[in-house]
Each structure stands twice: as C-alpha cells, then as structure tokens.
Length: 184
Image 1: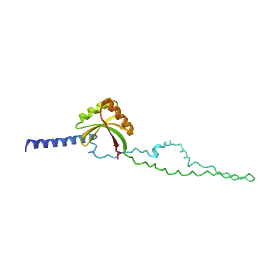
Image 2: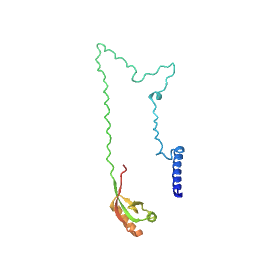
Image 3: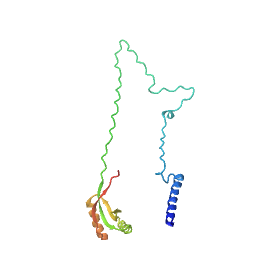
Image 4: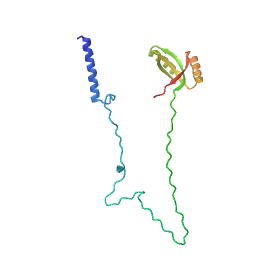
C-alpha cells in the first residue's frame, strides 16, 4: 500500500472515531444523528388540582349538586304566580377559523450597484455605499457577487435614491425588481 492510501484510511478512521465520541459524550452537538426522544407533556389531572378533604369534614357539595328549594304550593285565594323560566343558554356558535390568504412573493425595487467575481471586491463596494447611509446587501447570482442597494417599496423611491447616489459617488446604478421568496 502507498503512503497516500494509508493516510486516507487513517483520515477516514479518525473522522469516524470523532463522530462516535461526539455522539456518545455530546449528544446535543449532533442532534440529527441521535435517536428522537418523545417530548413529555406535563398534564395535571383534575384530582391533583382540587384541594384534598381533611378527615372528619364533610365535602362541600358542588354547585351542580346543591339542593334546590322545593316550590311552595299555591295558596287558595292568592293570585297565581307565573312560574319563572330561565332562558336556555344558546350554544356557542362554532368558531370560524379565519382563513388566511396564501403568502405571495414580495416585489420591491432595488439598485444594482455592481457585479464582482470575488467577494472582496463586492464587500468593498458595499462598505462604500453603507458609509453613505444606504441599506445594502450582497447576493450571489450566476457565479458573481452582486451588490444591491435597497429594497425600495416603489420605483419612484428607487429612482430618487439612484439620482442621489449618482451625484454623490458617481456610480451608475441599474433599477430592477427584487422578488423576496415566500418561505414554504
């Protein structure tokens, strides 16, 4: 066996041992490899929530079990009383679930300030624009790092920002739509 093959085998063995040590001694480091533990819910039963009775005391009757006074028979010669009827409580209407409209991608406008092959160049441009008080970000697109200014809610605001940046820093900017995707 060559030295390269031996080094490769030793490297793979070291990585396997490292994963085993991390898995056994630090299960939170590699949670995706460990067995799933069921989440325990702390639910108290009604028996534990009610106060316990003391020996020798009678339990207080619940409001539903309390005796109702017996109706007195009508006396002769007295005007007849109308029996008092309680209106039956209406059952609560089923709660309608508020249907949410599906999320739509957000379309705003941004200013493309430059496109660079390496991140260092894009970072320098971004810092230059940040010093002028602009919101900036870098987005990787087709292998290049694009420096963007914005986002702006309307095209008019983007045009105004482009004019002010062109006079301040003499950078030509391209106004484009920025579509913010919706999380799934």
